[in-house]
Length: 88
Image 1 (cartoon, rainbow, N blue to C red):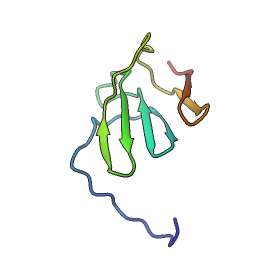
Image 2 (cartoon, rainbow, N blue to C red):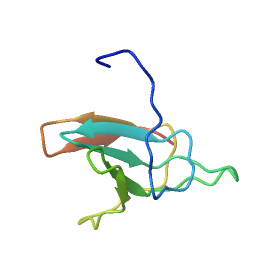
Image 3 (tube, one colour):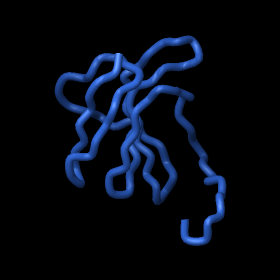
């Protein structure tokens, strides 16, 4: 952003391609939830990109996992939580 130049990030790992997912950035991490793959299968996967190391992870979560969905919205509540809502 500082010099208005696009640069492709170099990564050693990737996540499965999805579309219709929801994403939110909190502190130095970007969270991606749900979406659909090329076979029109929705999922309820949660992926986290550490924006400092550019490493992906799939965190261990607690509680009831939301159902698979596409078109979901995510909003950051504070520096530690987000709210996931909507979708189908």
